[in-house]
Length: 69
Image (cartoon, rainbow, N blue to C red):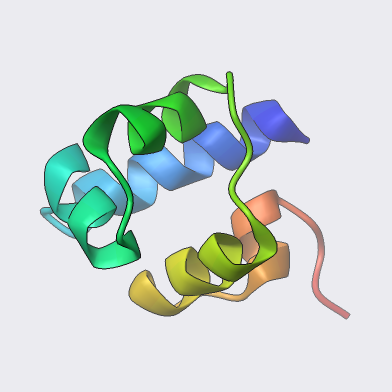
């Protein structure tokens, strides 16, 4: 699931025209912390997972690569 998450995260960020630094600023975290989300060495907190879903206007399930019912 983490592989799908990090791929979705990167694709959504690029499609939104945002840099890693810009996303990190919107989350209130450091750029290196955000980069670890994209490379899969760290997982976001539940709060930041929700912020990412809101930022990219997708559901958390979609961000995680889960089917929505």
